Every structure is written in C-alpha cells, then in structure tokens.
Length: 330
Image 1: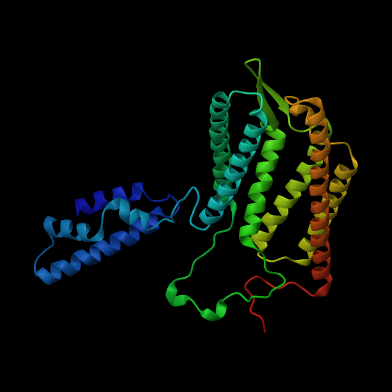
Image 2 (image 1 turned 90 degrees about the vertical axis):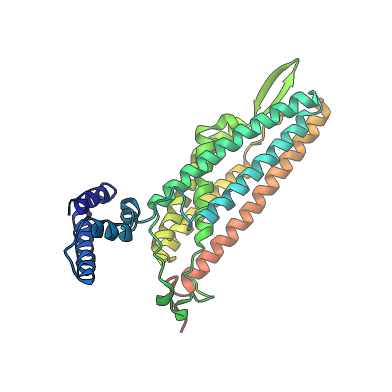
C-alpha cells in the first residue's frame, strides 16, 4: 500500500489546495475498490504487482490531477476568434498608416533608407500592438463570466436563440468595442508619441506631431466617453440583456458623444498640417484645405451615425421591454 500513498502524494502536489482533501479521498476509494476487485478475481491477497497494475490503469499522477481542474488559457477558445479578428484589424491599420507615411516621405528621402526605417518602425509597432492586445484579452479571459458548455446529450434544439429579439446583444461586437476602447485609451493617453509623422532632412530623422494642440484638449473628454462605452459593454456581457436602465445609460453616452463631435467640428483644425512641411508651401496649403475637409466630413458622418444609433436606442426604449438573450419567442 506504500505505492498508493506515494501515488496520492504526487497527485496532491498538482491539485488545488481548496478541494485537495476531498479529491484524494475519492481517488483513494477508487484505487482500493479496483485493487479489491483484482484481488478477488485472482483469488489471492493483493501484492505489489497488483498495486502497480491498478495505478498504471488509473493513469499518471499529473494526468489524473488535470482531470480535476478546469483548462487554463491565456486566451481561451471562446475569445480566440475575436482576438484574431482584432489582431488582423489593428495590424492592417498599422500597415496602411506605414504605407501612407512612406509615400509622403518618399519625395524627399532615399527610398532604401526610408524602406528600412519604415519596416523597422512597423515591426516595433506591430509587436507593441500585439502585446497590448494579448494583455487586454488575457484580462478579459480572467474577468468575463464563464460560458458553460453543455454536453451533446443535454443539448435541446428548442433552446436555440430566437432570431428577432430586441434585448439580444452582439457578444463579439461588444468585446471588439472594449478592446478598441482600451487601445485608444492607451495610445492617446500614454503613447501620444506614436501619433507622429517622421521624415529625414539633411540626413537626420525629424518627427512632428500628427495632431494639433487643439485636438489633445479634447482627449480627456474622449477618454471619459471611451471609459463609459467600455463600462456599458462590460455590463452587457455580464447581464446578457439590454435592460431599460442600460438603455438610459447608453442614451447618456450617445448624447455626450454627439456634443463632443459637434465641438470638434465647430472648433479649430485638429490635423497638424505643418507636419508635412517636407513639401512646398503651395502644395501644403492645398493639402491643408483637403485634410481639413476630409476630417470634418468624417466627423459629420460620425455625427449622423451616432444620431441614428441614439434614435434607435430611444425607439427601442419606449417600444417594449427587452427580452433575455436566450428567451424563446412565443
């Protein structure tokens, strides 16, 4: 029986402290029952060879201990598809921005030197972005409620989600919004040095901010709205339903976003066109007008989209009560 004690001791080293005693008691009972069955079948007292056979059949201590623990992931299967989608979006944006910066600076710099610098910056930016995304999703993996999966035998087709439910939420969309909001908070508040235009002049690298000081005066207000949106999506993921109270919260966030967008549209320019002083004055003035028109046009579109979302939220608020995400339609 000494082998059984040694076996149990090794299994216990890999078990959580909270349930270790109960689990070891269960394993001990199983081993003793199996050993007794073998002894009766052989018609003789249990010996060391029987104990060895029983322990081999039961499995290695590490594997047995794993069977009593939940799988542990940095990013688990439930979040990995969304993680991979966000990675592709972010890395694609970085590649596009690098290509634009390369094209702007190409007019005044040697192509080979500029390509090497661009590739190096792109690699560093991709690694930094990937690290931040992994960090964010690891936090989500730890904090989001577990999604319990049922066995195939317990699955009932009648539990399938209804197609049209006002209270239904888009889980993937909420997680993507959380991640993008956290990335925006990190970049605009802690890494504003990444938001620059870089070029060489007389053999020296020069960087200039992409945004004006007027833009960064809006960043604290933008951050408050991003935090509010993150909280809204976390509550959605936890409640799994768009409740009336959460609708009012979303309405407040939308109104704040509309006010901020209106302030930016009516305010001074937010793109620092002086960053493009590698080109001649006339071209820079034309570019300034064009960039300002593009930015304000994009903000107007954002204003319209946010207004539509606000109206939709208000309509749903007063049309009828929300239903749980998994409720079946009558």
